[in-house]
Amino acid sequence: MTNAIFTGLMLGGMYALIAMGLTLQYGVARIMNLSYGEFLVAASFASYWLFTGWALNPLLGLAIVVPIGFGVSIILYRVLLTPLVRRAPTRDALEVDSLLATFGMMFIVQGIMLTMFGGAYFSYSFLSIPVTVFGETLALNRLIAFGLAVVFGLALYLALTRTRFGTAIRAVAVDPTAARLVAIDVTSVSAFAFALGGAMVAAAGVLVSMFLTFSASSGVIFTMKALMVVVMGGVGNLLGCLVAGLALGLSESLVATFVDPGLTLAVNFALFLGVLLVKPAGLFGRAQR
Amino acid sequence: MSPTQIAALAAGGAGLVVLALLPFYIDAYYLSLSISLLQFTVLATAWGLFSGPTRYVSLATTAFFGVGAYTVAVLGELLAWPLVLLIATAIGALMALIVGISTLRLSGLHFVIFTFGLAELVRQLVIWYEVNKTRVLGRYVFVDITQSDIYWQLLALAVAVFVIGWLIARSRLGFALRIIGEDETVAKHCGINVTLAKVTLFTISAVFITLVGAIMAPRWTYIEPSIAFNPTISFQVVIMALLGGAHRLWGPAVGSIPLTLLFEFLSTRFPATSTLIIGIVFLLIVYALPSGVVGLWERVSRRKPEPPVAPQVQA
Image 1 (cartoon, rainbow over the protein chains, first blue to last red):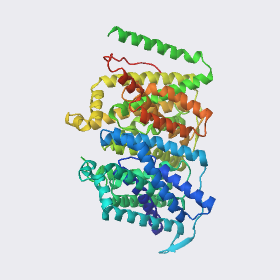
Image 2 (tube, each protein chain N blue to C red):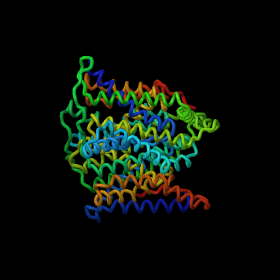
Image 3 (tube, each protein chain N blue to C red):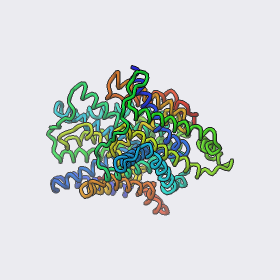
């Protein structure tokens, strides 16, 4: 029982971290990114390549992969997504357009990875040392990943709530039109938020690669979990991300332990639908329009 | 009926006869290609039936297709063929009702997310059931259905989907859906039962997709969940409908023909990089042709008064 709860909390922490980047991309920049999981897996591959090819510690690899994630995302937003933002007459139209564009992107990134690495599963062994916490044995790499996830989440939360720029980001999330009235450059803030999301997903990819096996085509499942967490928690809300992520992780590990590991996805969906039927805007979301 | 409409009907009828006689004159390779063409035409048109007017992007094509195929895998040898198709229809409709009722009351976004995961969910449930209850994973399909039979069934289904789509567009339901697509709030204020309209059409569209899956199943001799619930089908159908233009009944069919040929070519010539190339094609379509070939054609010929459009019963 304790073991199941521990595993669930760790898993939930990971889900929350994965979803935080998406909540920035979707909540602020209004880009519903279906290629999100592919970018996560790409970061995992980068970490794998750095570790096996250059013997670079994944924790140091973070310092390389995360800025690249930021840079790639900002280029992507400027080149590919800005035309869509300009073209879209309304927010809803942008959502549909960005959804389709990133759906295409998902296949491109996946195709590139398939060409480079093939369809096989990859993993590497880094710090897989058993440690005992509260009488339960856990792998050190998972603990470190969880700890870093907490640090990243906290840093992001503080940056968004305590700094002037963070406040601007939140203002754009709430109302882009009104944000323009108080002299916020909505386009560049959106681009920055999208890129910040890209940096978060790169970090998540590196951390996940330390303890999970991954393949070129495993991105979809990450996208799906991240989307569920984001929508369940309330779009653009970090605290919602955390709570929804933990709920998802806990439910998954409890079901895997006590019912059947084959039913985890079904439980995820049941939870997702259950929450949305009661609160259509998500746990911490404001009712829209 | 005006003379042009009669002429169009006559041309459609003649085209249909030619298509129906096709299996007698072409070899196995072209027959299999024609089956692919018909398959994607029906899938894309059925997808467009719902997603075109309502603008709800459904990514669940594979889920329904797979359910149809898997129903045949389980029941194909036990029951008569029409009965199998009937059961597949019922299962597909039931699933569409459940999904529709639980998600279509929510916003379009939630619907997209749910349909995005639906195929994976159904696949996992099927695997779980097979492993734990029946203890078989993967089934052989031995039914007495030839390639030509598959072709004719698909042709009949194509005719059905066009006729039904045409009838819906002319009915109160079709009108209601167009209003929903324009503005859902306005539709509600007009007294339209928005959820009922959406769920009804989603179910109709899903039944066609399920039937395609069921009809196509005998093409494989061996079916397991990862074959039946192949995620690229959802993707291919969306891109075809978009290329053609989902806002017209015959738009998706226009898109399905060149893209089926392209996919066929890619998978034989560049199997390793086909995913990448398909993704690029998709992006090009989204950026360059936001309302599809049909939309482009309509923009170009806007100055002329639009002639009354008869349904083109054509594959």
